[in-house]
Image (tube, rainbow, N blue to C red; front, side):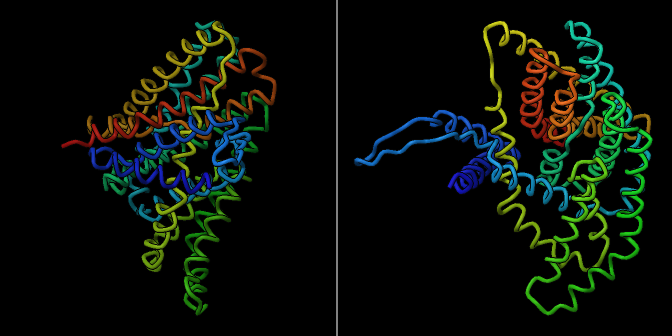
Length: 395
């Protein structure tokens, strides 16, 4: 029932923002904020209507396994679609740009986050975690905004996608180094093996695999095989230490190079945009209600930390990524567009914060502060990015 209401909310508010000439994704995120607030208000309350008593149990829908599962499928579909619509030749052409953007977008936020932590009286380790949180980019919102503007398969869109992959790899290696989760050398080797097998060899054999879809005379057999490849790539990406969305993007990228990809594009979009992707953005909006405050001191400290972290995360990402793009030879306007596209934080930022807590680097009151601030960072950056992207692409 909640999923049905979430889907209707997402579509209605998405259309409302579309009529206002704003990216529909904003409406979907705000639908999540509204739905999450309503659900939290009703949680643990009882109502009697026509002599029937209704008792609402825990309605923190952002924590429900079923809702989280559908949301995670949604972001996989979104990155799979972006891979299908990206030409590998463009990605290769913009490889240098992506590398410079990723490096600039990691170094500056990391340094600014670390310095902010030190100035706000956090320890060396805690400050380093804050810096790491700010390095991670999640391009789900960016990809959706670029698709809505029909500019995904441009130099800017391709640079952002390439930089997001490199950014993710750098963030994983840095996290392993700082938290001592695993040897950075071993992490790097696993990532190299993944890309060697699933990208390089995938491009060599993908046509033969997809030919099965032509030979199996069943409805949508080709689509089923393609979605199976999507899930396999995502699974092994997580096993290699990356986010599953990187695997989804790689799967879409290699399938997108085949002639047969045209046969599934519309079906994949129907699945994604018709159901899973709106649920993902609703789920992002519900994160706002995962924030729990203690007393007045806790509230004040979190507000101060959030203001500082959000400001330096936006400034650091835009400045660092834009500088990298400019050094690589992009124009000032395209460099700014790339920098804005790298602003959102999502799953990797939350993974870094929660992993640091589970490994004892963040403990007690400081751990709570940083986790709440990270959640607010996710919500705020996902909300403002579509506005910023639309503004930079105005003619």
